[in-house]
Length: 452
Image 1 (cartoon, helix red, strand yellow):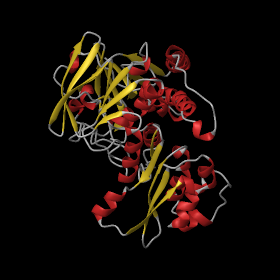
Image 2: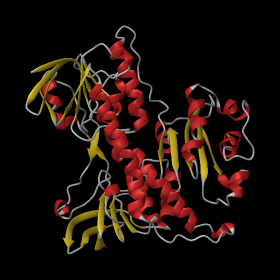
Image 3: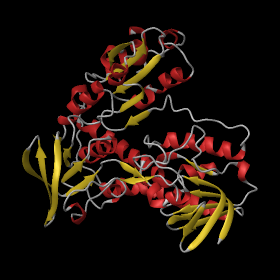
Image 4: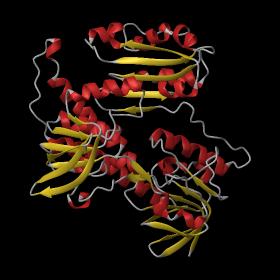
């Protein structure tokens, strides 16, 4: 048995806990997979490197309206993939090597499972600690579909490293992972069939955003809405899915299958029940505003503890946990009121705050505006006829309640609205108390604010 002062499980955002406050204590880090976590190795960063290449390919194929004679002749998948992971893989190994060089840090590699209160077994050895941080993330959720396990499907964890672009890609799911990877492979030449249970893609977005994204995606992909997968099977080199769409049965065919139906937290796999830590009905570790679990000395952060499953959320959690462990007499709480997210499909989507159907449900008095990109000079210059910014403000206080953008640079344009919400500005102050560069695309946001 080995004892440590601090035990961190997971090397994604959990790895960033080790500020100089922890230089003089005995730390153990446990990692069952590749060092650096999902975002670095098979999530946010590599996927956006693929998305950038896909954006360029899509633009090349769709620029005739600008008077440009450009054509997309195909993608060198091996070159694209190797560029991505030729840059990503050394970072993970470098982080691992750096931690192993630190005298006060011990890195244990292997599956960890709790066998008691603050007691974690790794590779047959039990490790105990005064303080434990649960930062083990999440894993792809796999639906219970007859035959699925036998067809050789991919998830977001594996599909970015395949050997070749499939001619026909089947995608189960309609969330942000499904949409981003459909954009990637569709831009590189794959025929995409998306199988979605609901009536739109991105159903967690504001209704207007989800509808617009779905309308535009219908122009690119074969989208089967209101559809359930009944069975999966492999026939030679082909994958077949038996589906039911509004009660009508049919079969779709592909060369490769991507299952993108969300991600499940890893608390159950760690056996946290042995510690007494409480999980919610969906398997997430329950924490208080200071990110403490119900067991003193055990903390949790990131995807294992809340459904947002966003790297910037996990990083914020890590800063709170690091401070609170080091400064127990000056605790800080997490503030997720203005937690934004973005979808890097085509077009981009970005969102922060309330969506309209929730305001209607809760009876909140509000005003709303939807402003097209085409109404701003740069959007007009782009000949953009589909993108827009939607804002929701409180009718009486004039506080911005929600902001939702679909279109080029959405993930960047929304940032000024996040900042305004965080620091309590009214929509009138956001609109009038600063300069907006003309004719930059951020005038879309300015004009939407003025319209409120």
